[in-house]
Image (cartoon, rainbow, N blue to C red; front, side, top):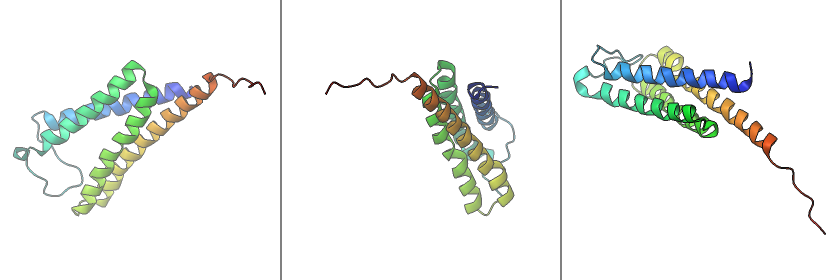
Length: 139
């Protein structure tokens, strides 16, 4: 499997999971918030805010993936990796489960960042391969 195909599969998985996660917070189901004890109830508005954030990130990444803007997608994936990292810090700061913080949020952040780096590597190699060779300058 080529690097481009692998990256496309990974980016698609990130987009679909992000949209699924976002919709699970927005839809009227009893949500649980992994790792945090005594998190606000569904009446607090927290699920809608978190879900809206996830859906917006998923749509942005999906649009870049669908339109073929792979270099921009790589950078956006790196930026999006900050959200689960922030969730991890939030869980740890509020004395939540360390295992959930690292195993869910930390691992998610690392996987998204790795996908972004792989796409940037792929697009960097493609850019070098298509760059015109420098011409000799007359003396």
